[in-house]
Amino acid sequence: METKKLFALVVRNIKCYFKDKFLFFVSLLTPMILLVLYVTFLRSVYINSIKDIFALFGFAGDDDIINGVAGAWLLSSIIAVSSVTVAICSNAVMISDKVDGAINDLRVSPVNGTTVSLSYFVANFLVTLLVMLCVLAVGSIYLAIVGWYIPFGDFMMILVDIICAVLFGSLLAGVIESFISTQGGLSAISTLVSSMYGFICGAYMPLSQFAEGMRNAICVLPGTYSVGVLRKHFMGGYVEKFAELGLPEEGQKAFMDGFDGNLYVGSTQMPLWSMYVILLSTCALLLVAYILIVI
Image (cartoon, rainbow, N blue to C red; front, side, top):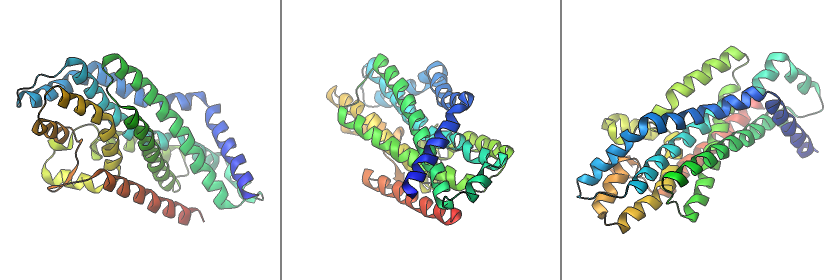
């Protein structure tokens, strides 16, 4: 019975979200703006940095592959950051229900309060996932134009990575916004997260550019690993192609180290499986926290 009520509430929350077309537009607009800013302003910066690394090993590379890997690097950053920022924004239905009093009607209805709270999380997860898949589709079209070298297996893992990143973002949004009851509070949190999150998770600037202490501090934050797993799968095919063209292993490692394809805590390189363990363990802790808050 509760499952049917949960399904009905999830559908209701999704409908409420899409009823406000402007809200969906704003959710989709933020990652699209980041993508446009990259293409128009930052593209040459990343490409020159890649070429500088390759020059150290006497490797010129192919312009299509270099353009593609630069785009793949930033697309992974945009998806990782937007999985959190969009989740904060798309969870606005929960705040709206508090503001207009709809939550009081739900609480006096024959529905468990935990079911109501869980419905917000599930709806937020599905909406955020839809937005991220739209961003992936647009980004994939761009990569196909400038240079697509992502194997099918890696692309499937990118979808898995997006699900993990959205799960993290939706749970984080649910925990934070459980304490917010006004639109002003939501706007303040959205602004704060949008302006800071991309920097503190190492998405906008490679961690190799930070001082060692700051780099280690950032690697403590679980959001860094949603960026890390995405970069592994977005960039892996390009690195294999560079290897086929003659880039030595030292050059491959230098490139992956310089653009966070490899993450380090101190001098220890984090294996891919450990990134998933940290990310999913954090999701489990956030889920427990969310349940404890809403019970």
